[in-house]
Every structure is written in C-alpha cells, then in structure tokens.
Image 1 (cartoon, one colour):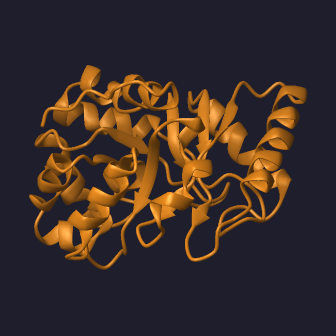
Image 2 (cartoon, rainbow, N blue to C red):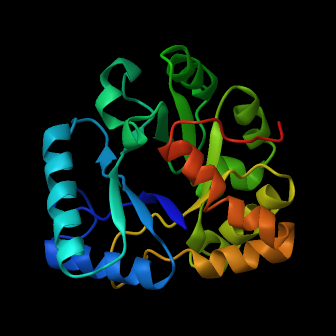
Length: 236
C-alpha cells in the first residue's frame, strides 16, 4: 500500500518531534503493509525550505534501510489553499504534477472553484485532502462531485472510515465512497501514539461498501499513478 498523506517528518509541523518517533511511525506503517509514504508537512503561510524537507527525508530513509524497515519515504506537502500556486513547484508529490490541497476545516469557501482553476491552470492536479471532515461537505456531500468536475481528486482519511473522527465523518466517508467520489485513502498520521499511519482496516471497511478490488485501488493503483506522475482513473 502507498500512503500519500502522512506527517512523518520530525520537528517540522504538528507531527512527530523526534527522528526516533518518525522511525516508530515507519515501523507501524510497514507492519500494516504500507511500502511507501509521502511525507506531507503542512505548507501554510510560511514556506518550509524544500531543501530541509528533502534532507530530513534522506536521513529518515537511510535510518529505515539501516534498521531493515521495508518502507520508503517520498517528498510531498499538505498545502493550504491560500498559497499561490506559482510558489509550489518544489512541494508536489514526488516531483509530479500532483499536489495535496487543504481547504479550511470549517467550510469549503465560495472561492474554491477559483482556487482549483488557479491550480489547474498552473499545471497542477490538486488532490483535496479529508473533505469528509469539512462541515460544508458533511452537510452537502454533493459539493465534492462539483469539485471533481473542476479538476480535483479526493483523498479521505483512514480514521474517518474507521470512526476515529466521529460519526459524521464516518457517515460522510461512506456516502462519498458509495458515490464513487473518492480516489485515495490516506492516513493523515501525525504520531506513533495517536492518529497512526494505518490503512489496512480502513481498506477492509471500504471494501464492504464498494468491493475489495475498488477499495484496494485507493491505496495501491491510484497512489502509484500519483507518485509515477501518470493519470488517475476517475468516474466523473
């Protein structure tokens, strides 16, 4: 499995604060069957130096090799929708045209269509992160189909499917999955103690809703297309 959304790098945002905890997260992920993690530190009002991000990834990967943990960490970012796309070439997923795009938790702003237009016009393929935890989408899941029609892809959180984020996020996740409006399941993990880098249980539960093959594609074929910069299959 490939996890395209994980805050695994130490001391860079609200994820782990030490390299030791990053390694612990990697070990948990590998034991769950994850082979690749895209490190996605928050990029909000200040742009974290991409050289620093790549340096931490290289250090972490070297430790994983030395400790025999069968997992590879790739570069990416969890990008706030307020950032100018012209600044983001260094923050794409594994050097591809794909970027993770985070809207405010409380609502999808009325400017979302304009935001997507700016990103798509700049040559990016935006992947909207965790819309099932956004109150606008919880109230009106059909908003997501409109965003997809305007060029976005959608990643929901494993913990939303399994109930970690409460019944509303779980119900919204189910609706989005059943309507074919989900392209990826990501962990959005932040720690080795809470919000863990796990995907398998969410895939199992999603499989009961949409079929096992379709659920597996959300953590295998579709993420593989992203990290290799090829096209992701969509139903819309």
